[in-house]
Image 1 (cartoon, rainbow, N blue to C red):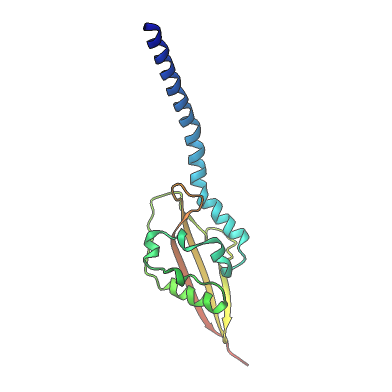
Image 2: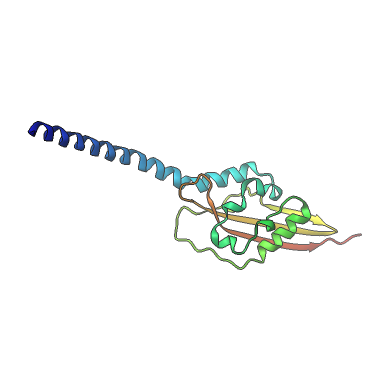
Length: 162
């Protein structure tokens, strides 16, 4: 009977050691991966996206935070034509929402010198200088980050015809 108790205790100690080892090895790897997701996604967007017209290839409605979904409808995100880009940008600019974060893992698309989300469009003799800044935050158990804020500025300039 004592021998069985001895082996049972030994087996339990072995299982506990294995669990601790797995936690010690897996946690840092998971933590590093989790915190780098927004940064990696930002660089993917900045270096593979060739303009505002391709935003919907990188940012889907499902990536928006619950707070942003209150202001933005799925149909509002339409970047297919120049007119749609300007109209969508104006809608996004009119949103009165300010994201406040105390997390150091939040990443902005405007934190790079090269930003393909700054473009100028011309429609009927009017130039629109449009700047999109998308702020990403890590999302638990997901490979895609959450879009927690989307700031847009649209400047309108009339072009004089000679």
